[in-house]
Amino acid sequence: MRILVVARPFTFHGGVERATADLLQALAAHGHDVHLLTPRGQAAVPGVTVRRLVLPPLAGAARLLALALIARRAMRRGPWDVVQSHERTLGQDVYRAGEGCHRGYLEATGTSRRRFVYHRVLLSLERRVFTRTPQIAAISQLGADEIAQRYGVPPTRLTVVYNGVDLARFHPDHRGRHRVAARGEVGVAADAWVALFAGSGFERKGLVTALEGFAGLRDRASRLLVLGKGDTRAYRRLAERLTIADRVVWLGARPDVERWYAAADALVIPTRYEPFGNVHLEALASGLPVVTTTAAGGAEAVGTEGGVVVPPGDAAAVTSALGRLRAGDPHALAAAARAAAEPFTFERQVAGFERIYRRLPSVRADFTLRNR
Image 1 (tube, rainbow, N blue to C red):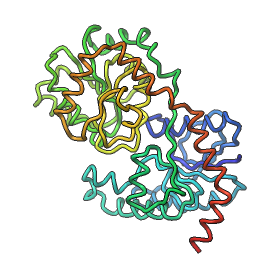
Image 2: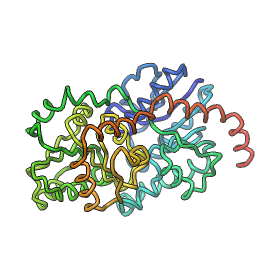
Image 3: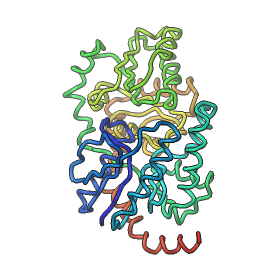
Image 4: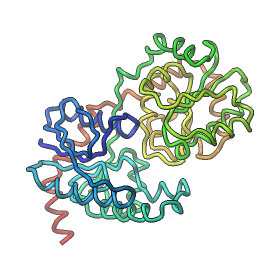
């Protein structure tokens, strides 16, 4: 199939960006002719034709509208079998809801009073996307349920397609190669028990709760590594107030995340809102048990064997969960974590999208009739 995918540049491979890159390359590897429509700044993607989306020098709400309108014009220029958007645009056949619902995000984080116009425009685009796109691909059952409840999208238009994970790049065997060296690089003892928080967007991903939960551990030799891009000043002050500043290591943003999974004994990501979060799959694939929350779609991968799932915002529950993993058999925990990740292959992800693509001819016709 000739597939056009609309997505933001992913020159820095964060969670959302890495998921997009991996999906596009997997679709190309399965024989599809994949074209990426993206603003300037996107590097070459192996097996994928990159098409530049030229946007005027705008910011905020104006940029959102420009992207939606200019992308729609570009979508109409080619004889595509499928047009799939990962952004809130207009005129696509398939929308991959990788960021969930902006309405849900605002309610979970309480940020709706800031940048009011931006949020109103984004919400308007979101409603249009969910009501006028023939097929919606959610990345977790949690996300699908939210989309159905908030926007009334029926099951005939809504499918869960889980992300895949690179099971070779993220592997328990890396522990033997990287663990001691990575710890030594940041001054962490080889025998210390180490929790890792990994992810940019510290507020949404629950760094406050992670710090508070970690502070409750009785093991004073334990360490918390914080990996991600963002302003750490408020969180460093919190660590000082919690008297754990000497036990927290601030790594910043790093491209070699697999080394830090290898260096750790558990991932703690007590998110407030997360449709899925590739960090869950990467950690599990690395043999790292996960502490996350019921507000994370990634909890569906963690299940009951890959770690512990707690309510969002509950620092005491995080402390208890970390303590439980601290006391567990590390070999059994690593094996259970890896087993939880292994079903999440790129082959499974591509097969899920291909089922959607095969439905499109009949779905398009029915959707057009119903919306005349």
